[in-house]
Length: 173
Image (cartoon, rainbow, N blue to C red; front, top):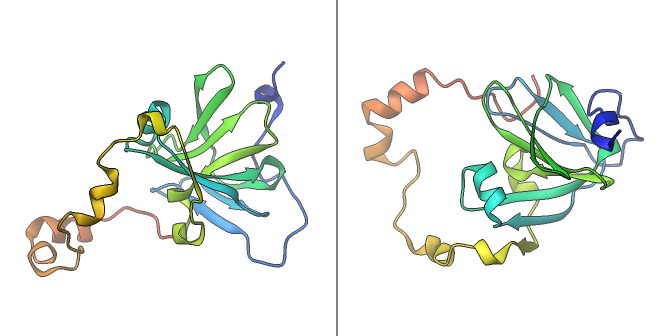
């Protein structure tokens, strides 16, 4: 029997609370919500091809949380076994990637984009540089606009998105 067979990420995981509020997060639709009661450490960006695929993006920002300090407060995490020692947790309803979990590790990796306040945890390291896209350093030089900029904000397309937005707010409710 592997640790994956016995580890339950649920409301039964409890630790003493720290002096600061727990990190909170969840999926886009709100079906899965979690808290991290301890510190998030080793915040990093992974450029490996597996993380690119799992995130549907050029890289995946992650941080370590002790498994015993990760508490699912609503819903249930679904799993994809991406390799023998690793599984990836996500919301079955909306597909949001939430967790990278190595079988033998005492910690799991929380996706930083799933945090309610992703700016609270700044990556300090990069992994998988062999797959890092060479033009990523040029992103800041691209022209850009906010969703509040006049042309985009006034468009019928944006009004329809706003009127039918099903994204869960970035807080527990």
